[in-house]
Amino acid sequence: MAVSYSVKILLIEDNLAEARLLQEFLRQADSQEFSLVHVKRLGEALNELSRNSYDVILLDLTLPDSQGLSSLPPLMSHAPSIPIVVLTNTNDEKLAIEAVRQGAQDYLVKRQVNVDVLVRSVCYAIERKQVLETLRTVNQTLQSRVEERTAELVKANELNQFKSEFVSMLSHDIRNPLNTILLAAGLLQNHDDKLTQETKHNHLQMIRSAIKNMAHLLDEVSFIGKADSGKLQCQFISLDLKAFCQQLIDEAQLSTKEKNLTLVFTSVGELGEAVWDESLLRHILGNLLGNAIKYSLPGGKIQFELIAHEHAVTFHIQDWGIGIPQQDLQQLFQPFYRAENVGTIPGTGLGLAIVKKCVEAHGGEIRVNSEVGVGTKFTVTLPLMRR
Ligand SMILES: Nc1ncnc2c1ncn2[C@@H]1O[C@H](COP(=O)(O)OP(=O)(O)OP(=O)(O)O)[C@@H](O)[C@H]1O
Ligand SMILES: [Mg+2]
Image (spheres, rainbow, N blue to C red):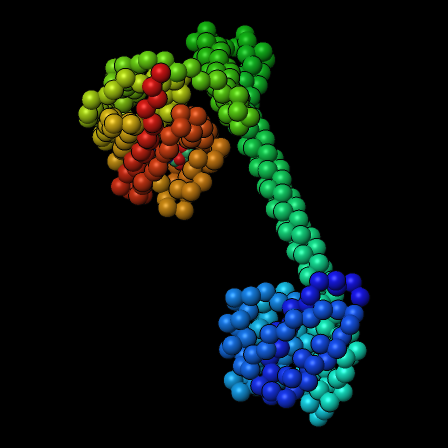
């Protein structure tokens, strides 16, 4: 027998004579030392189990406060790793077998117990439970490894899908300007003698602007690539944030004129000393202002607010334009994602993806509130960084 220490047994038995008999058998055992605690009710046993640890439980199946198999579940949930040997009368062996099926390690028929049978059964129960416990842990480890691996595969799959979507969107957006270039260049080549100087000039102009669009698109894609691989290089410098915002507003005013928009800039609170990455700020605010202008209706209003807090600044960029449908809000910051209501308004869907990367690089956060037909408000909060 492998067990060499004193085996601690909890005996749950309401019949005193039976309990004494078992105790006597254990005393006679010379191959192993046993220490036995005897309780008469299930309730007492549960109390005892929460106070002390045991190697094995001997359980009578007819107790004053619990009958038959109903004693098993509370014991097994209270002490899941302690083996249970049930004690039955001669006439309910069937019940004993059912108890083993439900999680007991072994059973003893009271009248047939002697020293050897009792010791063998107790030791067997302990060993069997240990094997089961080891199997259970191995099983659990295996299961959690399978789960981890599955999660990794799902993630890799998603990434693969995202990559191929990204590539197909990119090729789609490059094909448009490329077609323009091909068409215009073809016309210039084949009909050179029939074209007026002005038409030639227009075609060349179209080619130039298509090339500019492509270069811009590639710049944006490579920006996102850099941000994703952590290669964005930030340069934090002292900056008069209010003056910087005013300058962005002045630049934006040029495009508001075409749509007859009113762009209002307000600044609240005193800004403390802080450092900023000018290029990140330009990407964030330029894109948000650009969107507000692009998605506004002619004659509309845009409000740009800068609020200084003690440890952060908040920018609100609000318009009363076409708005964004609720179902599109969640995916808005994904590259190439455009809401369903953009109609023929041009765009690639990369602006907000870039804004998000820049906000994150600046340690801040961005939120959006919007309602179709009412308008949109983007809120960016950036922490103040001091030198
Ligand atoms: N102020 C706004 N009002 C309404 N819809 C907006 C606004 N800003 C963004 N959106 C929606 O979010 C989408 C994603 O914006 P994002 O700036 O990323 O792309 P875009 O403006 O379509 O193209 P670009 O890459 O040229 O900026 C837009 O296509 C539009 O559906
Ligand atoms: Mg945009």
